[in-house]
Image (cartoon, rainbow, N blue to C red):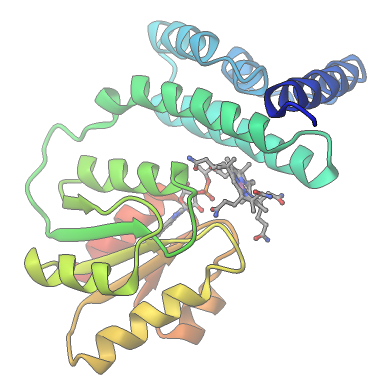
Length: 237
Ligand code: B12
């Protein structure tokens, strides 16, 4: 019988070798915060933290570190996953590395002049475990002065509604990263309507589009975290 640990280690070594080969071919994108970007591709959380700290010390804009360093490296990991050159364990390691970098940036992304702009309930929809983007959106909303209740991942429709009612929320924000979990967003929008409630809804996540948001009757959509803050401000008025 194959030992799972050995098999995972084998996978990692094999794909690690592939990553090294790709490096030789210069497959890494050139970005201004190269050390951060590279460290995520190395899937090394300590290296990511070191590189992020170095950029902070250099005075680099935190949003550049986030977008050009951390987020674009995760996009590259996703591309490699699609191509079959990295596997789920590596995606997880890269995700952990990215989270460590985001944690370093979080204190720098707080708005100094914040006042509570409204209450937002946020979560990743049912059957979906992706939370990096959702966490970023939650962090930016919090920094933007909103009171944010984060329900985590794999959130059932009923739980969104209950939390919104309990906290007298203005908006329910939903994240989905899988095409198979996007319909859960529609379920929440319909459940709100059926219950005669008037919560606004915002949807996002890599496969989600404005067109999809319109189709399911969501109140708002944004392609990224800063846009989510803008949209939330617009919706709450
Ligand atoms: C990291 C990752 C994982 C990690 C997740 C770790 C974690 N804690 O989140 C792990 C390894 C667990 C994972 C598992 C799986 N994954 Co995955 N994963 C990814 C990966 C590489 C990156 C996602 C990410 O974090 N991106 C970075 C963040 C910052 O971007 P984001 O989430 O899009 O968020 C931004 C915006 O979309 C927006 N946003 C996000 N949410 C919201 C919400 C609102 C309200 C608003 C307004 C905006 C907004 O703002 C964010 C910041 O700017 C993607 C590839 C990709 N490029 O998307 C695949 C990807 C999403 N996974 C994929 C797959 C197939 C899977 C698995 C099924 C694999 C498997 N065989 O097991 C499982 C599913 C597990 C489950 N049930 O959820 C596919 C999905 C394909 C599809 N069409 O559905 C992708 C696209 C990879 C691929 N190219 O094939 N994955």
